[in-house]
Length: 400
Image 1 (spheres, rainbow, N blue to C red):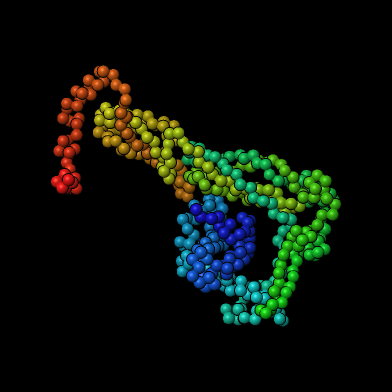
Image 2: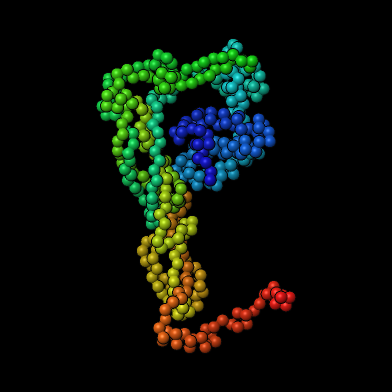
C-alpha cells in the first residue's frame, strides 16, 4: 500500500509550498542514488520522495490528492514525471540543499561555500537567510475519523453532519492562554522562536538551528496564565461539521476538511479533519467498480420459457425480462442504475446474474413431472456433445 505523501516528505497537511520544497530537497539529497551507490532501498526512497513532491508541489494535483487520496491522482504520480527514477527531480533544489548545508549564499564576506556550488551550477538556488515565523502559536493537531456509508449513500453521494470531540479555543481567555489576553515576546529568542548555535568545522562555519526551549518555538510567552485552560488557550469541547461526500467514493478514500481539526494552543491555527470512508457490506448487492451485481435465482421452467420478474436495485425495484433459454450465470444489464462515477458524469450499471435454483425437497408429483421431462429429447443434453472427449482424454484412455 502506498504511503501518504505528506508522511513521505514529513510535513503537515497545511504545509506551505516552501516547506514542502525544503523537505523534498533534504530527502532528495539524503537518498539520491549518486550518494548511495548500489543501495536499492535508498533508490526506492528516492523514487517515493520524487513522486510525493510531484503531487504536493502542484496545486491542482495536491487539491485532488487532499480530497480523494491516491485515487485522485491516478495509480502513480510518477507515471507523468518521466526521468530515470520515475519522477521530476528538481536538481536545482538538490544543489541548493548542498549550498545550505555548507554555508549559505554567495553574498557576504566569509559565509560562502568553500566548494563553490553556486558558482558551478549558476547560483541563485539558496537563500541562506534566517527563518521567519509565518504565524503565531502552534498549529492544532489533525483529527481522523472513520465514516461508515451504505452502498445507497455511496451511489448518489450524501451530506453528513458529524459530531466531533476536539480541542476548541478557551472562551475565558479568547484562546490566548493569558488572563489579560496579552502575550509577551520571548527574551531568549527575541520572538523568532528559534535559537542558533554556531560551530566551526573544516568545511567552514556550521549553524545548528533548534526550537527555542523557553517558548517552545512560539516566540511568545504567557506571564499571567488563564486559570480555566492553564495557559494553553484550548479546552476539550464538542462541535458539529457538515461534510459532502461525492458519489463513487470507495473504502479507504478520504476527504480533508481544512481547518476543522483541533484548535492550536494560544491562537495557533486549526488542524485539519480527515474523514476516512468505510463502505458497509450490502446484504443483496456486490460492488464491482461502479457497477452493482445482484444474484437472481430462478426455477428451471423460468430459465427455459423466459419470464418477467421484479428485481431490487439501489433505487427500488424494477421489472426485468428474462429471455427464453437463458443459461446459468448469464449476466443481464440494467443501464445507469449503478454507482455514480467519482471523476466523471454518469453512473455504472446494475448487473443481474441469473442462476437456476435446484430445489432440495420435491413432492411426488414434481418428481413424476421431472421424470416425464427427462424422456424428452429437447430437454436433455445432446449425447454426442455431452460425451465428446478432448484429445488428451482420448490419449489418456488409450495409454492408460
